[in-house]
Amino acid sequence: MNMDERIKRINALYHKSQEEGLTEEEKAEQARLRKEYVASVRANLRGQLDNITIINQDGTKENLGEKFGGRQE
Image (tube, rainbow, N blue to C red; front, side, top):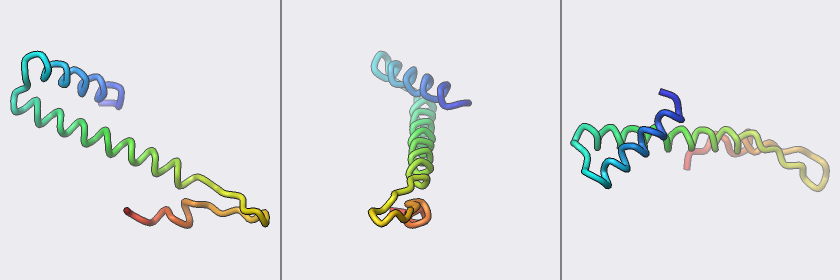
């Protein structure tokens, strides 16, 4: 299941929960899909942030991924 399909399913489950409620299996699926989505967003953001390079005033380049990339906060 790709990300677009996951998002559509998350939205469908949300709308169903508002209209008629969810079964326990659907609630578990919704929680799992949301967790996968958040993990994907975090991984994408981390990848983007790790590729940022700052050019200091003295002209040196500093890659933030190399400097801070290994930290887990």
